Image 1 (cartoon, rainbow, N blue to C red):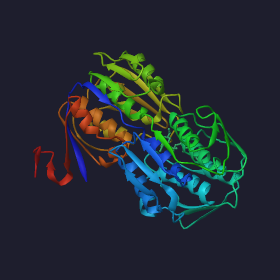
Image 2: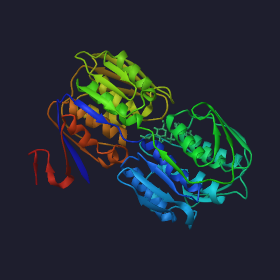
Image 3: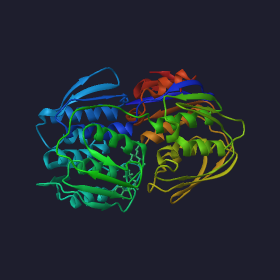
Image 4: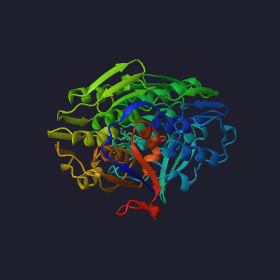
Length: 429
Ligand code: EPZ
């Protein structure tokens, strides 16, 4: 196990290049098996979730050739099985996208029931409702979801809850179904648009991605394709918030500012100076941040994945702020850790009250998921003294070279193996 040691009170400054989107990449890679041709994908983030996805594909029999750190070529011509490895699949929830892609390619899939995680219950009832509407039989036994369909047939599917995962899974399956599928109340995230563009490049016929009604006319043949993954809007927003929280001045580059409108608006509402240019955003922290009400919603609302970093920022705004987490039940595991650093936060159900302006002090804290891990690192940069953040493997799942990028912005941060560092003496054993 590794941990990150941060010496606080650092105002970040400089430029940071944003990597490709984790949540687009983990949807595009499973979708690539719809074709037996060769697919070239670039701007993949170099993160453990992508590495895991690649291992799952290789385990299925897909031949993969790396083309540099952030690009690869894959040829799914000889897939040998319809059950991805359990050991690999249980590492990441997004592997459930293989339900849609294996069903689309082979009419069968056997995928473990995805684990919950620290964001509260994460059912997949909408995925299964959609697969059955497309004609798949579903059998759940011994912790496995077994799907099979002699033929997938297009259907009109209304999602009871706006779900990125269900929208993605059903778009992939419907791409190969006979006839038209209409997904209503679909999620509108940019990652869904990126996947639709990739599927269409392979020969699919998908219209309306990015709106709440997506029309998919199934096709029975997919070709190879090339695709460049969109920038990661959550990584970009994390750095924007880190700049504001540390009172620094950072230019966040290689992004699509439109994907960050809710974050830009909220930062401006808090008094942060934000300048938007075509492919970059400059954020300048200010002495006295204003408290704010922050509510998370599906895109284009404020993203739930930026709620933990957003909470850290609000601890620096003198006065009372309120966060309402509307997407997940219980996405507040980072609160207890922030309280160990002196934050004054009270959680009531989906609402968190933050009494800001108190100042944080360094402490040993633990990450519980990748976004809370990033939030705790930001808090450590703001805090007085030294912090150590354990369970940083969570952060590695979704942030490419996170601490290197922060060091480049002036942070005093290092990664050590758990047993090598003693917080009391501050030395390696
Ligand atoms: C995606 O998860 C993201 N993951 C999450 O990012 C993100 O937090 C989440 O969307 C919300 O934006 C990936 O894209 C890989 P949902 P997903 O289905 O698809 C409920 C990160 O940090 N729901 O949109 O699992 C669900 O419980 C990760 O990068 C059902 O009730 O989220 C939740 O309350 C964390 N039934 C809400 O919908 C279902 O069948 C939104 O979930 C599906 C979902």
